[in-house]
Length: 357
Image (cartoon, rainbow, N blue to C red; front, side, top):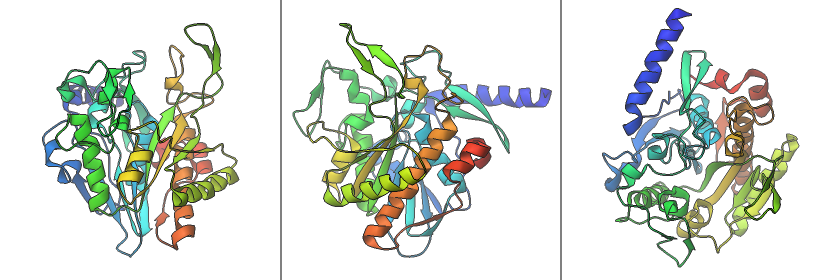
């Protein structure tokens, strides 16, 4: 026990000292055939805290290319941990998968600004010993952005605006990006360049939202229910993407898991599922699992909440991924094959920690 406590203390100290220039703890499994950096697609990110590792999982057999993204918002930990598990355990048997587990690495390097009661580094126990789930912030660290937040956010390619100027640091408001823009715009641009250069056929951007089951009041006393986005799969309004999404939704429901199907609102600009689908040839999707940390609870348990534990959210994400792949394969033939990943029931029985290296 004493040795374990010493190891934990060293890991915490190391994590804290690295927080300003964060390097994620990802332990690639035998399915990873190459590792690169997002700056390989846009040099403007090189030597910055927004440059992030990319993991290539190539079967060596002809097929489609699928891009899996986690960590667009670094407080949405199920997205990052699902991507990490995919890298550490998954084997691609046909086609190719590219994984970006920490899409906005700057955001994960700092603490969550929405709920200061959630620890930045959350300890877990795995077969290889103690590790940490990192709970970061929704947006790019202001120090990495280098530009002050504008009074009003304006999407570069349109007239779409938001009153909150801090959204200029929100990666999922900046697609398709700007090559010589602010760092977050360049981050979005680099991801789009990756998709174009690697000829990505379809992609999934994983997110989390507030969970259902809560009733809140707005500033004038009107009540509203939480969880509108929870368990949602959003499709680019492309006929093929919508058909694949419908197939995937039916398959998820076969697991007795909740899912809601929606399509991008063309009036709300800058989001990955709309802009990537419109500016590239890649069919684009976005998923939302329910995170207790996004509720208005003062001290939420983002790992082991009774109703929405992390293992449930990771299992739901993996089910969505496999169902999207099945939907794509139904539309275009046997294009992607994945092996060695647990299903929802195995994760619920054994815990997500069992499937990390």
